[in-house]
Image 1 (cartoon, rainbow, N blue to C red):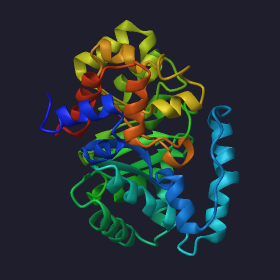
Image 2: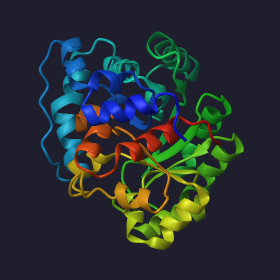
Image 3: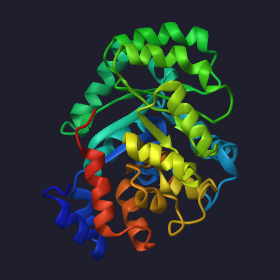
Image 4: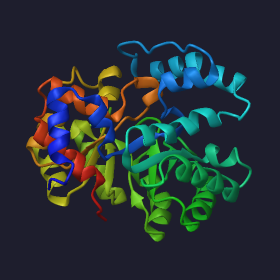
Length: 319
């Protein structure tokens, strides 16, 4: 399903033409807002040189510790706008990379920082209109996987009833609770017609991917790369057109994939599993959307034509 940009995109990948790549519409639908800006932009904005991330983190906890010690705590101490700079930078990057379908993930804390849901919505609508008004803006509400479900239900009802959030996610590590524990949360999301997503199959198994789909009725999955170990689960994903929102550099730097050349996305695509390519935490993993595509092409993981098909799927209108 090529579009009018496909020829230019394919040529730009082959020629390492970053300038052109940046101008071509792409999606970023797996993007944690507070970590979604470029470190170069943040350094300039705050007049401070931030450390570059290591080549590989020691898992999720190692990544979190590095982020807290090298970026988050400094920003909290020196940002007069109470961390708005990092959040604003996510929208700046959406503009720079011509993100046509943009789904930044917000937490309950992000909402609480503005005192009310109304204030929160007004502020982020302003950033959307200021920086990337042409992007299809699909804010996602993410709950922590270890959250106490019962108190979260009332807040979820209020937030999804507003119509502002277009998808639900549960993140911050796998295996904290049985998938069945999250059913009441996902029932509320389903009631308001939002897209049902979850972080699963990054550290968990292919069986976990299947169980999450069947238990919660997931429409899409953030990560899901371990589905590659089960032909049956890959067929399920392909048959139901359940998209995996994959973040290659994140997987590599967390040690969940060996390299770009050996990244599971190759086998997933070859088995008909729909995927998108995303940043996850740009501020931490230091690889923007255009760079993700270029690195996969340079490694020979996927052809320029295959990568263009992924790009087109990412920005397509679908339920």
